[in-house]
Amino acid sequence: MPTDRALRLLAVSVMLSSLLGLAACGGGGGYGGGGGNMPVSGAAPSKLFGADSPHMAIGSLANPNPGAGTIPVDRIIAGPYYTSLSNNIGSLALDPALDYLYVGNGTSIRVFYSASMANGDVSPLRAISGIGNTGSLFLDAVNNRLYVGDDVNGVKVFNGASMASGALAPNRTITGDFGATFAIHGVAVDTTVKNILYVSNTNHTSSSDQISVFDGAGTVNGSNTPSRTITPNPASGVGGIFLDAANDRLYVASGSSASNVMVFDTASTANGSITPARTMTFPAAITSVVVDTVNDRLYAVSLGAIYILNGASAATGSVTATAIFPPAGGSFTAVAVAP
Image (cartoon, rainbow, N blue to C red):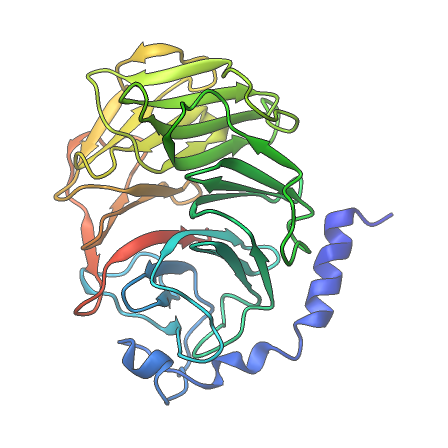
């Protein structure tokens, strides 16, 4: 008997068959005019997505490992009429199987279908609204669940992510013990055996930066005390995070305070003041990090560049990475990649 996910994939493939013409407008190589007026010529489906908030745009590349220089986009989601993108694109999450791109767009999440081919001034097919600020996203595709790091209200969890739409009340809101005033920077979940939620956050009450760890990610709710807390030693700010669940390894960006990505091994049991197993140093402050574990490739996001580092599982110290830059006047705020 088909699984729920198989049925969703079948339904989506039927529903999207009429949308594949989206790539018939727009152009590569620059953002020009919200996607340009020339068709994409022979570009394979996009795998790498970069959000450029000042341009209210998302550029995408078929080649997820490009050479250095200004971002060589194959497609651009941008435009004044239909995309509804703001200048506060704080996060991206990609479902490669369904080909959905979830865009944290300030107070809402815009969901673009057929994301690997989407180009030009295209409409999101769904929007989830009523959020304070979508600073970070994590898609649990296994359980069809979306975690939203609403950086002023807590972690909001929406079940049935593949169909969620409108001004929905979250199924759960996790406020932990982040403090009376706080900021959430990143969310990651071990969706398989361990079922653990990681939340990087700053507690403004105590002026501390940490990663709060909650066992029972699928059910945790409300102001639960974290099961464990990882505090970087030496002290460091924290930004976006990425979990390599298969290797029990947590990558933590240092945020605007430093140009590092910290790596914590045996993340599921790490507790207290912990020295990272490795620290990678980049040329600029790193706000978020994503790892393509299939190809062992790390993407470190700064406002002025996305740094692409191969051999992420062993890299340490001052690293040599490929830097791709936004067009003039732009800055990067989030990245997503399909393996």
